[in-house]
Image (cartoon, rainbow, N blue to C red; front, side):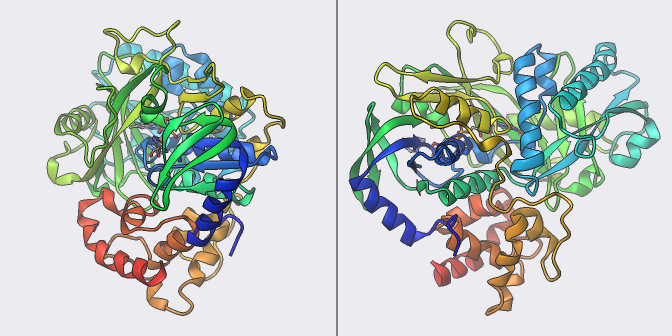
Length: 506
Ligand SMILES: Cc1cc2nc3c(=O)[nH]c(=O)nc-3n(C[C@H](O)[C@H](O)[C@H](O)COP(=O)(O)OP(=O)(O)OC[C@H]3O[C@@H](n4cnc5c(N)ncnc54)[C@H](O)[C@@H]3O)c2cc1C
């Protein structure tokens, strides 16, 4: 057992301690932002508790495009500060924090006879500017390669599903891709736990004051006292802090059979006609479907969760991606979909949301300190979670300084570390240095090294690890967040096997 492990015995101990002690920092929200704050605070030497209403990565943090990106899009919008922050944080993530969870992904942007002249001229300039930021952020070339021009045949070699007819040339650039966004959240939270943070899921904050939070948990209601309360509740922020302005935008993705897009080695990025700095993309994943996206649609301010992307969003993505492909994508190529909501920070002094598209609202984050001392963090991105956490803690009056820029997460190891004998490469990609431990659960039960459903890839040992070490307690925790089986309806057949393992190891 490791000090990073989250399990029921630890929960009982932590809940009991929280009835007695006054913690330095109480964080509300177990998405990437809240987990990042818990880790930052714990590594400053502060006592910390994080409370999450449902499960780690329950909210927006599991519905991203899984890119640790340098912010090319923000450059196109002239948001240089956000692009710079993204480039710096991407570098920290890929070099030090989670090199095991993030791989460099090449992106090919094709240009056809009818591509807009503006895109042909501006995209290469933007790529050079983004690469200059990479260099200034000290992310080595060995991590993210040089952007360059590709001939039509070179582009087709990297992305064979591209439409060859009319293809004139392409650009190539590199960005970071997460193996799984929810896995990043879990790794951040467990690393915080290793530094002593009390990570309590299924604990809903009902009301918030400057020095305390009232909680509803399955074990009963309780009040936790804290020197600093920080709200990182994403799209639910308004339920705890109605005065913090927030705009919600829906982003949908479609999951495609890789064959439908020619099993690309590179992401295909296509400018959206008529919109500056907006793209649709198809991202190959290491061992799953191709992720195509993304919409940016104004959403009602009342938080909701969706099981699948709306039909209109799916159609919007397919219509814009298909013209760049040899064979237009049809419904039969779609193996799943998902939608998430961006919690966009609205700065009353800078943003006017009236009539503006959500795509135009900056992706910067905001840290606001209320008169009673509660700090609320909104906006930002998965890529910049660490900086958001640093800014939130710096806004408190607590002692200590930030240490997280080069702090490796649990499982972190250099990218090209050889996979140990007997360890499936899938596990090395997901668990890094912990993969050997994950395999070891099968020593007494070799069947656990088999997939939980045909074709699904997920192995029984991953379910066991989720239960013993990653805070999963239910079949849904495993299907939806420790593995991502639930995003592909065909893998619903795995549920019985997952339930069997949950029953045996809970
Ligand atoms: C479609 C889409 C694609 C994106 N793609 C990318 C990308 O590729 N790269 C990137 O960098 N960023 C991306 N983002 C942005 C990124 O995903 C979000 O900025 C980030 O995940 C927000 O994390 P969060 O922790 O602030 O919110 P959340 O992940 O939503 O976490 C908030 C948590 O608070 C909990 N909570 C709410 N109320 C309470 C309460 N009362 N008590 C206790 N807990 C509570 C919730 O259950 C939830 O788990 C994308 C966003 C979307 C929507």
